[in-house]
Image 1 (tube, helix red, strand yellow):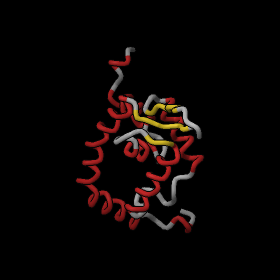
Image 2: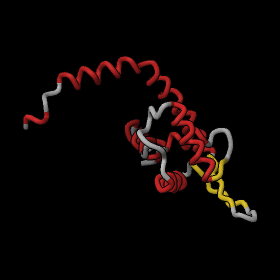
Image 3: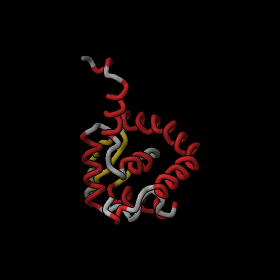
Image 4: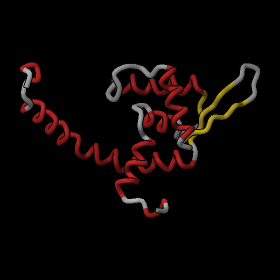
Length: 138
């Protein structure tokens, strides 16, 4: 079976695999304007999350998690690592054309979430309210 003939659900599965990890979209969005050094990327993501009120994450991004996220994104061809020679040594990260393409593909999904935010919240609250008490052993 060629890549062009993958069923729809398999394509979605591939895309979701590239997006796995709770910080991938934050890295994609942060690198959209320009390449960044590792430390600036970490600072930018955490500052953005703080400004938004930690809506999408409960705590700041840690170095180990960013490193792991960047490794996965490099493996998937979404980000490239650029070593720029300098007195102090600098490592920069930049989106690849495929990474930019993925970010553009997420725009309709973000719009869907915005359009249905209220419905999602109500459905989740109704489900939670109707759920039996788990502590009763049921």
